Length: 192
Length: 161
Image 1 (cartoon, chains in turn cyan, purple):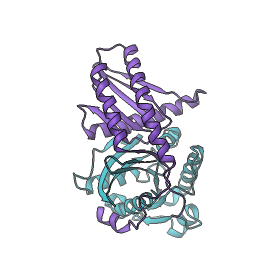
Image 2 (cartoon, helix red, strand yellow):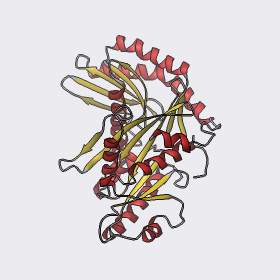
Image 3 (spheres, helix red, strand yellow):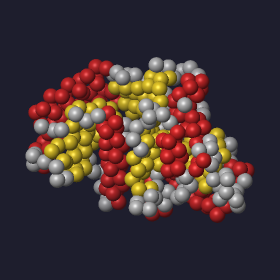
Image 4 (tube, helix red, strand yellow):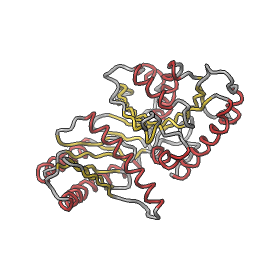
């Protein structure tokens, strides 16, 4: 939930990168971290296992600059995608202002994408949130790989009513990573 | 996306922030705490006191809120509604995190001189003094019906990146 600090003229937002295991959520944050100037970004914190799989979350604070006189602060989080971390994932999603759903475009990941999206909606409802009212942007990642689902197939699975804006991305190369962040930022800022 | 306003958790004004900083300043020396950090359940830093830098306080906020949120999933698994206090004890440093309103957490960091009972006493005291100020700011957030970003922000956000 956004926090407005009228004393410091700051508004803070929480954005969560959600999605199935290994879909590229942490890669998104790492690309954002490496691409932005030092003065904009804080420390990148990652709570990961020894094999660099996210255990709890990754966290990247950004202080982007000012919009209509208010400094915009973003806290970017990723959730752990693996099934066993269901409750940890839920706990990271609490009180979020916006979500980037990172789907894995590979054909064999189809069910996992659908399951993860369903899990996200259920968690939001559990928190008393209206999933219809939370800004969500879809990112169809790994578009450079072979054997991937078409955008139409992904849309049919995750965005049948064309409610959400989507990006085709190759997060490892930074393609459409910042563009995704830009759109979710616009959506959350516009809501306050 | 159309829809109602984003839920704003808390809207702190200058007077409230000053008041909180006064409370923290007073009890920081009295309790011999090293740092006091006020944060919300989203992990956002609201106020801080002590030698701690803003960057570190921000990271503490994100991690403390994460720990708190995870602890509460644990509580529910055990049939508890929620655990309102989390305490971590180290060789040199202790941190006490407590829920002081529905959305706001107070983290107090101490060295190892004080016994746990004293830490709990001070955390409770600081929490009790801070709570009414936060509740006021939360109440105001609920009635914040006027949009703050009432103009088109697209171009401004383009310029931020």
